[in-house]
Length: 105
Image 1 (cartoon, rainbow, N blue to C red):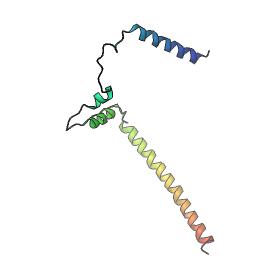
Image 2 (cartoon, rainbow, N blue to C red):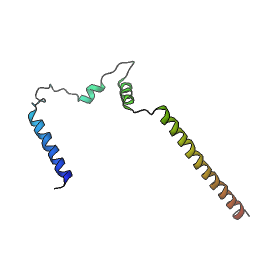
Image 3 (cartoon, rainbow, N blue to C red):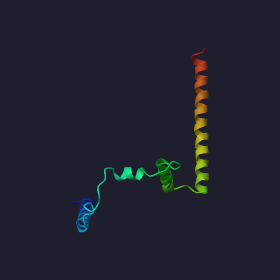
């Protein structure tokens, strides 16, 4: 048995022993007709619908770049755009010259 398989087996055994040691919480819960996701999504008001709250919560999880990273990445985008634009411009001039001197003569 490989090391990874052994570790996975040990993890699953630990999880099984932890779940066996815990009391059965599902028996104490009152079942409802709606799932937990539907219950969480039903919150919201007229001014703040649930989808707006979802967007705000997701934006709080985002790792935003700092000012230096924004400047550096903007510089990289501009330089790469200029290089690709130059390559495409030269290719266009070359194909235009080729068409004028071969097909149109």
